[in-house]
Image 1: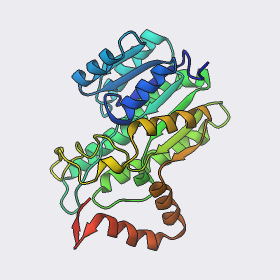
Image 2 (image 1 turned 180 degrees about the vertical axis):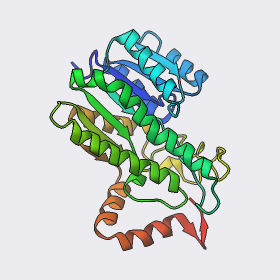
Image 3 (image 1 turned 120 degrees about the vertical axis):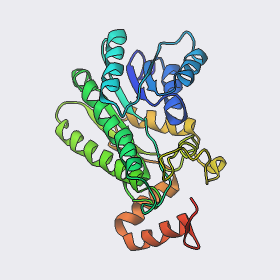
Image 4 (image 1 turned 180 degrees about the horizontal axis):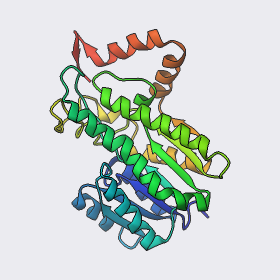
Length: 268
């Protein structure tokens, strides 16, 4: 029997990418799943693709506190409790700091950081009761600031630090707190990344076909949850970046700059 059989699992941002892959994987493992997203049509399609399985969909923008509460309330009304919360909803950006609107940075922080805080706050009483798990889907950008993604990096640094503090607070409660840094994963996040005006780019500057798939990433995450790990850093490039930044930060500066710039222009 799967470790997730009959567990109540909440995944934010489950309409596409890693979130969708997690939802579908947990359903195959016998879990009862709830997910939210801003696009009802995508959520409805997800539900139809998994017809007959225990899946609650709820339209919500995680940057809005009241909508997060409404989502968690809906989960409790249907399922009665929560065993695992995966804070996956997130948004990226692609613009140099000198060009970006400050409102874009605030929007990124509201979704990536505050969305995690809100959903965790409203889920925590149930997770404490069940000695469950809280997961934050972070990024390598939460360990190493990335050019052109200053707001995204700030939000993921904030997430990592906040989750580390929360993990320490809950260390004697039986609750496991884990943050996941997938590295570059094939998903829609770069297509919807915000430009300097705060609008979606609509395209990606990277070769998605060479990246880890969302489905593979989801498998790694579920295994880490089952083992109640503290952190999970994925891909060789991701692990290399974290290692270099920790022990050889000056070298990491140069390598990251070379990766993202060409002739002084941001290319990725």
